Length: 327
Image (cartoon, rainbow, N blue to C red; front, top):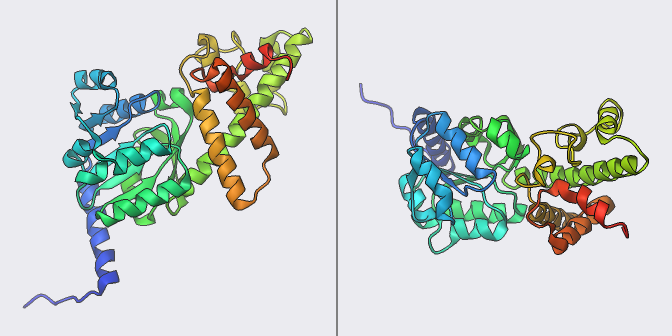
């Protein structure tokens, strides 16, 4: 008996085509994955993909960042376009909106050689409007773009315990989650493209405020004669407890394995925190949202960048406050 002919309009055809793409991605789980941006966060994230058995194709603007991945058996490429030519699933982890634009739409960007049906996941923290712009550009090339910024810091990136906040077409979420769960313990769907960035911007504004508050409280307690370890212990069993006090304490000698124990090296750079707070300010202005503490935090981190703290971890605000008595 002849097979029935199914007629589909443009919308129906696209829904059917999307289902086929999603199905094919789940069936090809161990096909190569591209990873672009091997900095403090991208490096351990890409390594966790390798640990989970994925063939990884890497690129970084600094070739030396790719060396250890070559030793791990990863393919190293010459440009983002080369990554797109070899992989139909790509994760990017970049410092800022201009970097993301260049990697996706630049002369040697991903979209120059992207394959139809490719899944592009951007874990950078950038302006939500830029995420939407890149999603539209990807769609014109037949690719799918999702924003999936992360929270948790370098320690969580190494341990594979990051939280991903994902924005994009909901039907593609499971395909993205397959990869993201190799690098994180929490993968949360937030809504349309840009909502992942919105969640991340709100989180980082709160993080900056709480870190400054923790640094102020610890500094005051120390000057009142309290032992910093004792004060931290008390805060962490009291109502002042927060992530900045119990997991990422900014006072040297209170905790091991955090940037404050290593002269504020590594971790999440002050310049990046200032950038994220700037994104929060833009969003607050656009939505007419009052954020007085967020604005003050932005000014403090901008001052830190101007006074030599740009490459130090953002918890160095404790050291900054100790030295800036005029504040």
